[in-house]
Amino acid sequence: MKKIPEVTLLFWIMKICATTLGETGGDLLAQTLNVGYAISSLLFIGFFLVTLLGQLAAKRYIPALYWAVILATSTAGTTMSDYMDRTLGLGYATGTAILITILIVVLGLWRITEKSLSVSDITSRRGELFYWTAILFSNTLGTALGDFLADDSGLGFGAAPCLSSALLA
Image (cartoon, rainbow, N blue to C red; front, side, top):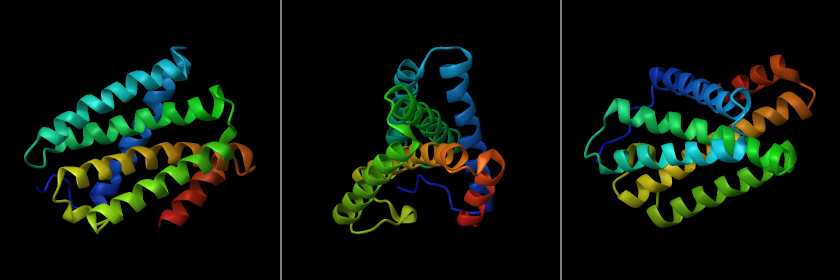
């Protein structure tokens, strides 16, 4: 059931590109086309569910399908985060705290039920669902935390990405 690519430098380059495209796509629909965060979130969650069903049905790693799900988590994550932070008025700090809590719960449940958090050793459908749930909420958290660092912390859009990149490195 090897349906996840090896985590290499190319993986991280693809992940950064998909995240950037997802962030841009989410903002395009919600802000530029003025669809709003609620409708955009519903549309992108629908896209996520369609691609996820395809991924779950696949018997092997299919690059285009895998990266379509990654892109779907990024676009849905962007609009969900912005909906929480801006439309619901929770703010970046509260939204970030909620998403960190959700991610910790997902990772904890994954570890308890699957006895591992190894992404290279996912052998069950349940493990795969935990993987994709963690990816979805980590991408949503990435938007909320990035917005918090850029806007509320005073770092701005120049220093905030540098700090994030340094911490990831």
